[in-house]
Image (cartoon, rainbow over all chains, first blue to last red; front, top):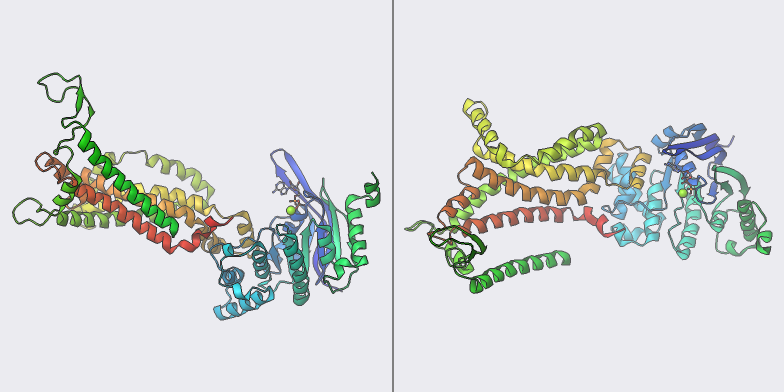
Length: 263
Length: 298
Ligand SMILES: Nc1ncnc2c1ncn2[C@@H]1O[C@H](COP(=O)(O)OP(=O)(O)O)[C@@H](O)[C@H]1O
Ligand SMILES: [Mg+2]
């Protein structure tokens, strides 16, 4: 049996608010295999971030069962089975690049020499070796995001959770980091759950694309991209890539794009 | 760094402006002031609209400075600046003790209030109310408690300790409030991250909350230092403690009519005292400059 990184069965989330309950997610059935790259896509407010936060055990699920590597999400969090990155890099401004990458290692009591070696390795992985002594305010947005990715990978997690990590970056940096991310994911063998609202980004990165819709947030369709493991610039111009982009777009809009264009 | 230099330049400019205004008014204003409604022959009657500018009321600045280097009370007593500096150092020591007590208490209160909502709810109103009790009212009470404890013999309680405690009473307030605000300052994303690292309260406190509190803490420390100076000087006067600058201010002010430049010695001294206190906190801020990086970026 293939080990499941994420196994969500009938997962729902309701936020109680002053004006009544907000149903952010209902009946989510989703599995992510070890090493698999899965994107969550959908209009804003459809519960992508909520689902990611449930997987990360930042919020508890209201209904259903959610297992990460066969354990409850809370246990997986304590065991450091996943690394996480958000749209904001969320670096600590008073720590250098090296200090930020080292933060989780420090908290978990890794000895100094081992820590320094691991930080050097991670800085190399994200191409920031020359910048380890810089402070976050001395870095570009793209570099900050790379630090955040290195930090998420620090504990060698088998699962990487990313919530629109490239959402605030310019198109060039974005495409560059997408390429880097596919390389890193392949090198580390980690499964990735990647939230985005960019269709090309979802297709370029993923093995499967999970399409979600709002009110209430739910999964409407799951598409396999069927693209092979090599994700390079040539792929972006290939016919099967465009075909997949169109398929995701249609799934998202619920209607074929051609008809939408005719009007 | 350039901002600091600009700050110093502005400060110096301000001092020069005050000095210029003083001498300008002294040169142009009426020597005996301007009084309306005075009844002839009755001193002190009427309302003074413009103060007197004669040398007794308003000595020249250079006379004030020169007085610092003339003997304190005639004969071969040392120049005035010697007792002024000695008194300032005495008070500075008390201010430092009061500041440290105040900062410690404020820090603890802030930590407790941040940790337990209930504590904030129960303590914060009292902390605010405490600051509305005038110092003059309880300084003598504290001093008499202190002297009784001291006389009882087992615990020594010198007068300066009472002064330090009163200074700390003013100093703890900004720190408690600043620490509470600062500890709540971390962004949601950082708190979420700490949770994903399964970090406990103490780890989160040391790695995130305290460093993130520094930008809120520094102004609080500065305010605490200023309050400790005021508290110590006022408490010295109201308790009647000898040796400090507060007592000296009162003493020399009494001689003002015969030696008008003399009271300005301790006045300058207390100004210098405030500057030293503020400068010390600025040094602390410089030492913690990495923790203020958040201020510059988004
Ligand atoms: N803490 C919360 N309290 C109340 N409602 C929330 C909370 N978090 C999210 N929601 C609601 O849940 C829905 C899904 O939000 P979210 O998961 O952030 O969407 P997405 O990331 O897809 O844009 C939205 O309607 C949002 O208003
Ligand atoms: Mg979101």
